[in-house]
Image (cartoon, rainbow over all chains, first blue to last red; front, top):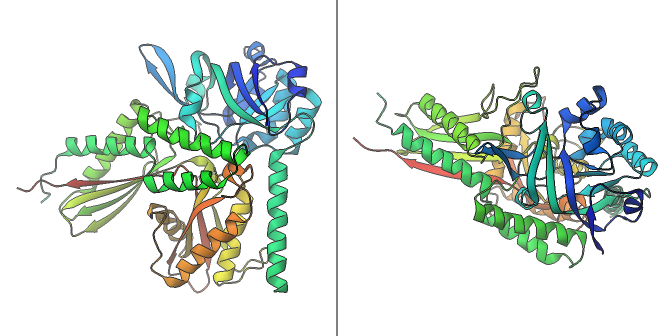
Length: 198
Length: 292
């Protein structure tokens, strides 16, 4: 098990060096985006987010944000389920040159192919651990589509320090999620066979 | 005639009950997660995940901040004395939700499905979900449950018999449904989950029965010996699947299985599964009434 510290934006080499199971502490700018954001990025192809996303990271997260003294602060920011973005994410990676997707639950084959093709990585964050992730946020830099999408669905641009993740899908075609799912199915099949034969 | 009832005090207590539900995980669930942590090998992914989870639980409580950003669809189960007006209770709960949202204890979660507009204050059509029942005591009891969208999305309802699952209308059939739901959920419901199961009922009462099981303490025993046995069997079988914490592999896939039943129609046999994430945020408030 290796723990690496990485600073966004990331290079192809940074990504190639990552393998499933590696621990990564990520620093720099990440952008939250979930269901409405992915539709927006694919359908409207907005230019104003290009610089921020290029070689950068999207975080599947709908945070709790509070405005205090005219300044936004991040109260809770754990990951949301990534698989809902499976129809869109491969296009987002290609269109914006993303290097990192942070989320929970993993993604499917379409995204896995895009990770290989465009040198990107899927980083796992622990669902429900919202305070730990919120506390890595040093500042809230900007927000896109707040009025249109509301707080959970807006694209929050966050500067983070040592955001802890686990590589669960790498650019070499490996997926921890696929491995676990296959193993659980095999275990179930053998359990059922034992039951039938017993 | 309604008896005197300090609506303001009730609202303040409700808002604090919501804060506690959101920020303070119940002890039995925290202990169960710590037990799961002790079973995993150090350096393993499961160990890292559970360590993160348990650290987060402590931080959230200490800092009084929501332990998960998805504070779910706020649901309240209310028992009230006859002489109290349910409408007043409803109004107090709505006001408490607005306060808790303003203070950042809840995420604004009520979205119009057609316009996509977030109401911004956790009020909307069908939100909050309220369940009223009258009782003989002279206090109001409000049970609050915050269940996130990720776990709600992997919840399921089966109609037996099922050819796909080779499941008939019996205990074995119920078992097959629960295993199938947990298999399909993998890590997406934020395992290790607590599996509420409702056998029978109709599509609504079946799921309600399943969801109400989530208020049971993890170490309790089902009064029905058959259901109790099924709960124990399922915990063992589900944890053999090695889906593990957050679906990254490991020894603990579920913390508990809690099963209830409701009478069904001759034609129907539903098995409803309310998958609850490890962050099973439940809290009960007892509000004593003033006597004239």
